[in-house]
Length: 101
Image (cartoon, rainbow, N blue to C red):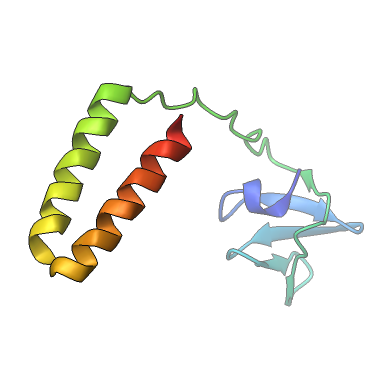
């Protein structure tokens, strides 16, 4: 298990020593002292540490809702910029919409 997947307070074994996670990159040893735990380290969870959470279902977006929100955003931006910037904004909108196809 990777260190970042453990909750704060979880106990684990690393390099033959028992540690408790005390921060995002820090752990304290059962023998005293603290240490930074590298991201690449493979740890053995102790005390029934929770298994890593499985990723949830991907969020689905409704194309019509997204396009409506984009058009509202674009209208608001158009009101806020001067004429030269408005031309650039229209070009950026066209490029954005073309990238979606």
